[in-house]
Length: 403
View 1 (cartoon, rainbow, N blue to C red):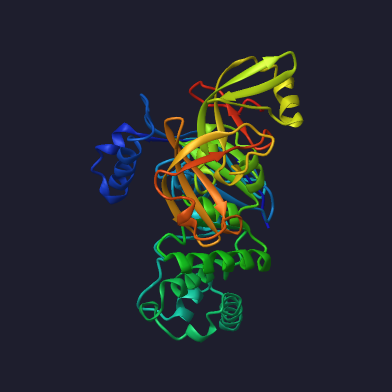
View 2 (view 1 turned 45 degrees about the horizontal axis):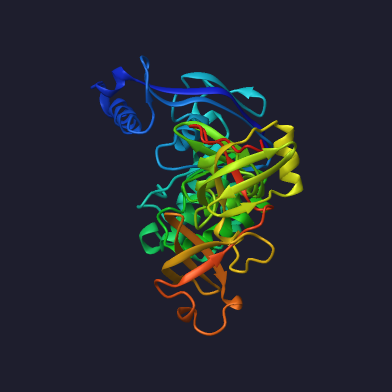
C-alpha cells in the first residue's frame, strides 16, 4: 500500500523543554529528554536522540527496529506516526512529504504496548470506533468489524468488554482496531512486551499470519531480538540513536557489521576472544591462545580485497559453531563452570583463556547423563573451523574486517 522513506531524520529534545512548565505534553518531552541523556549525546541544541536516520521501506515490507532501551527506535517510530515532531530531515509516505501532516491524515495506524482500549466499550465498539470517526455507514462498519474479528480469531469476544479478556486477546483487539481502517502503514511499538513467554510466541505467529492477509507496510519496534529475527523481512539495529546495520535476519546473523551487532544478535551471545590476525602475502591465519585457525577461502579473499594488515583483533565465534570434537582444527581447553540443560542441547559455560566461553552441545552427541561429562571442574577440549569465525578491529567501532 505504501513506501516509506526517511531521509536524514534528526530528533533533538531542546534543553528548554526539560525545564518547561507549559503543560503535561511539554513535561513528557522533558522527561523523555532527561531519560535519553543517560545514554545519548547532549549538544548545545539539547539531547540528541536520533542524529541522522536514513531508510527506504518498500511497499508491504515488514521492517523491525531493534536495539536496547533508549536507543531511539520508539522515537523514530513516533516521528513516522506524527506523535513526535521531526527536528530535521524529510519523511515521505507513498511519495508524499509528511513532516507537517497531522497524524490523522497520514493514513497510518499504531498499536501500542499498553493496548490502549476503551474500557467502557465492548470489543465490537472498540473495533468500530475509528470507522465511526470517519462517518462510515453502519453496514460498512459491521462488515469491516466482522472481517477483522474473523481474521484475528476474536469473533466470539465481540460483545465482551476488555476487562473480560486475557492479555493476548486484548492485544488482538488492539491490532484489530488498527487494521480495520486498512491503513497504508501499520506501526507497532513493542506490542508483545506485556505478555508472558507462551503468549508472545503465539502472538508472533499470529502477526506473521496477519501480514500475509492485509496489504499494509509494517514497521515494528522491539528490544527482543527473537521477535526481530522471526518477524522482519529486514532488521534495523540501533544503538544510541544511530543505525548500526540494516539487513535480512540471515545477513545480520551471519555477517554482523561490527562488534555491537555481533553481540546483540544471537542467543546465547557470541563468544569473543583476544586474538592476532597474521598476514603472509594474501594468506591469513588467526592465532588465539595456543591454537591457529585458518579462515575459509571466502573470508581470506574478503580480507585480501580490503587489504587488511596483520593486527590484534577481537575474534567472534557463536556458541553453536563450537565443537567438542577437534577434528583437523586446533584445540583449546576450558574448565566447566556451569552446565545448563535446555532440552535438545546443553549450554556449557567454560573458563577458558581467562573468560567465560559458552558452548552449545546437542544432547544427541552426549552418551549417558550430561552431568557425567560436564560437571564443575571437568576439563573440556573445544575447537571451531575457519568458516564460522568473525574478525573485528580493536578500534572503538569494532568493525568487521571483512566489510
